[in-house]
Length: 150
Image 1 (spheres, one colour):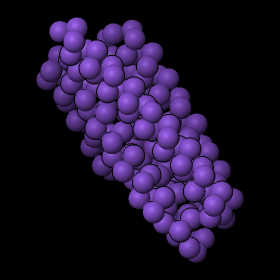
Image 2: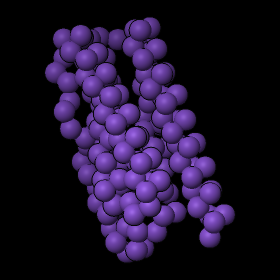
Image 3: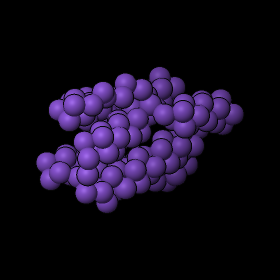
Image 4: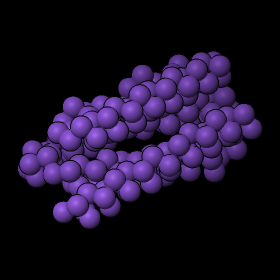
């Protein structure tokens, strides 16, 4: 892989991770349940750290790190807002939307790992992917708990 291809791959991950960071931040603001607010703030902080880590690796490759999310991410955050307003901030609906965003992030990280990245970068991306999967499973458990409480 060329340095430009590596930088493009990492910048794609920065964008989707920043979407997740902002999505969690916005979801924390919207959450009325204290446990969701805490969960989303925690996940937002984790995603912010992942973005900074990826930006560092882009800079090490001699590239210019992305600083913002994707247009699709903006649309996703709008949809979370819309769904929150329409559904009366329904706990399960908000979690479902956030979980959907995490599934997309997992998919993009898996695609990156299919590329011929340098070993140290593949290791970083694998660690981030493990975190994304773990958090997606955590959200699924919270959603399941919400359904059982209903």
